[in-house]
Image (cartoon, rainbow, N blue to C red; front, top):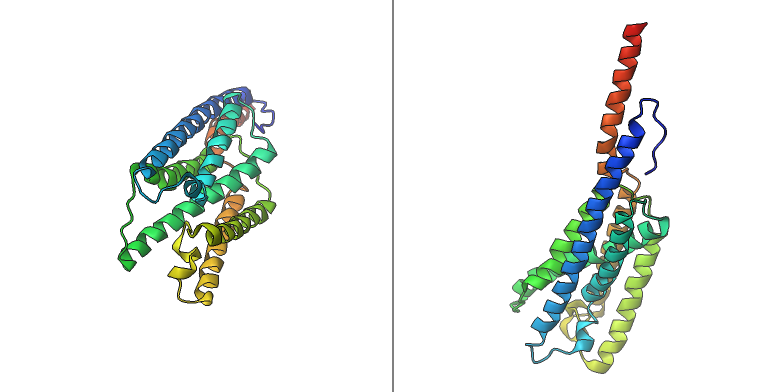
Length: 249
């Protein structure tokens, strides 16, 4: 757990506490994966009640794609955490990429809810959408900041996220021309007033994804809160040992 030997004998205790905490977060990640799967299935079933619903359109949403990736990565991260080992560097970067997508999608969805009300459109939000857009990203973000064993994500994460987002947007625009459907209003030419508005929304979306991914990479430069908390007993023991040695002298 990235520990150094401690002459007071506290390292073994600290490592043991860290491993236990890792196991707790491992179970939390697996629970999030299970909840994500249930929410995805529930959202699919709920969509079947709409006359315009098609499986192809359902899986075209960036939120759905991001949460499918979140499901897979959470299982991997949970299994590794249960083993007690630190997350490998590739997993830190992969988690940052996926979390960038889920958090950004949640922000975009909140914006869509606000815009739907402003434009007089009805936008139903079932419990499954709330879980996928708000609950899971929030829990995963707290995990990113608190859980021990997480290392530093690479700065190239930002480039990965932007390339994926751009690629998804291009494919969505091309597909929309053939099927006559777009997952978000700001991609639909029929709902935009001008080409300039399209590029404005596109630039804002890219800035959002880039900003959130940069923030997550930046947060990964900070030591996880749980690791800092678990180091307090070791430091206290070291101070007590120095005080006892001073009294003996």
